[in-house]
Amino acid sequence: MPISHDAHTVKQFDAQLANLRNLVLEMGGLVEDQIKNAVKSLDDEDLTLAREVIARDQIINGLQVKIDEDTITLIATRQPVGSDLRLIMSLSKAVTDLERIGDEAEKIARMTIKTYDVVSSPPSAKLLRDVTPMAKLATDMLHGCLDALARVDVEMAVNVARGDDNLDQEFQSALRRLITYMMEDPRTIGHAISVLFIIKALERIGDHAKNIAEYIIYLVKGKDVRHVSMDTLEKDALAE
Amino acid sequence: MNTTTIETKTALDGAVNPDVREAPLSSAQITDYDHRQTVGRITADNPKMACREVNVYYSEKHALRQVSLDIGANEVIAFIGPSGCGKSTFLRCLNRMNDTIVSCRITGHIQLDQDNIYDKSIDVVQLRARVGMVFQKPNPFPKSIYENVAYGPRIHGMINGKAELDELVYASLERAGLIKEVEKRMDEPGTSLSGGQQQRLCIARAIAVNPEVILMDEPCSALDPIATAKIEELIDELRENYTIVIVTHSMQQAARVSQRTAYFHLGDLIEVGETDQIFTNPRHKLTEDYITGRFG
Image (cartoon, rainbow over all chains, first blue to last red; front, side, top):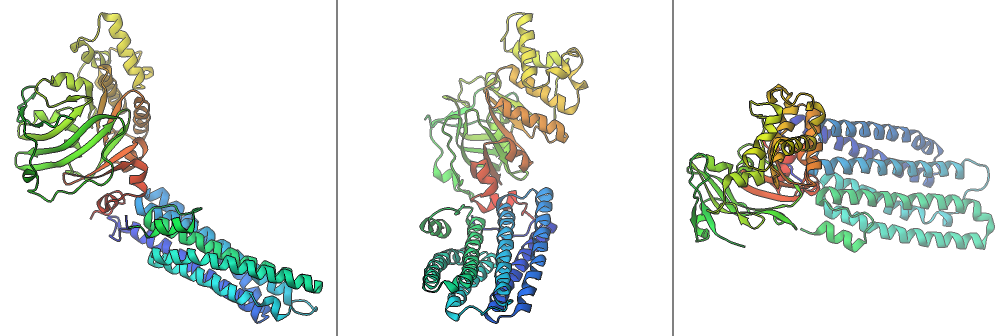
């Protein structure tokens, strides 16, 4: 059953739902900026920007608390059912993943500081070569799932879910390369481990974005597509 | 299944002679309106009652259209829908309460176990003992608490002697969760009880004649939340022994007490399904709009 776009008899309920959705999208926008800035701070060796990213994580945490409070109030006062219930549950779960994505951005920013805020030599460019393409994949996935959430678009959500396989494969290749560098020259091990943490963070961002895409499919189709194969996910999501 | 189509035009107390037509309803007769097909599974694995193509007319008004639905044994099924949707009308068909309305005409087929309840041979008084009813407003007889419960078994000749009657009255009040509150005041009038107690007295009265199905027409709408909770708890317990059909305006109540839910709209049965499916992922837009409060 597609989602009803008609207004509720109680208009305040519509306003509350719209408000909740806007808060989640606002949080998503902030989280997106956080990742971009965290990766940029690494690229530009910009410690000031990295510290800003770390500080701004508090704003995202604050939004999570605010959205959770609003969600509880909505459930307590409106007893949502049907697509309203699915919307509220999906938003509430998406918020948890967004907050975690924010934490991953903070981790990357901390790695920037750890890597460049010391007197020892910076990592060579080849150690960092996988970060930019993986960051692009991860931010595209996040952007895609936020877009899909804003437009309540199942096809976009399916595309995001598909993208996660790519990112996982990139992570595995990057990992193999890092191991090779470390075996060739043990002096790179310190920096290589930092890079490993960074690409792991990017890989996790992809997982969280995929989770959000799955909540969108649940929201629209009422089908729980977590922990199923990609084939089943596509079948359930795109079935009429 | 016997597909006899029946048509009743009976006056008050309508126990007698529904005019039985042998021919099934022709499709031409049912195309005079924009009938909506029911979404979802209308059948039950273990049906206690089976209704097929039930139509109800009040004079010219076509109040219920082509409703087909099974009511499963030992299930609680909730009928929901806006006022005037036909849910109470359909409920009242199930024990022929509509027979008492002069202008009411019913076609279709309703079966209780193997019996066509609109068959000529059916004794309506016996039918209503098998399919009991609890109403929106508690309506105890103006008699003692004891007599309210004893009345049914006595007129149905179900008991031999005072001791047996006492036992049945106590057992019924016990099942209705009322015995502790009334055992010391059995001779006081039923109307002296609180609203919630009166409603449980009416339930005790209904189950005293050992019915198979209990119909409840908004049984909690006149009760406070605590009395409502007691009735809901009771409904869940009664399900072990009885089949329960409940009409309710409270969707939360339907969600709490029933296993299946049927949604009616302007005389059509729109959707029927497992209650959790209806309240989390309804398939019909009208169901969705109703349960989420989107009717203007």
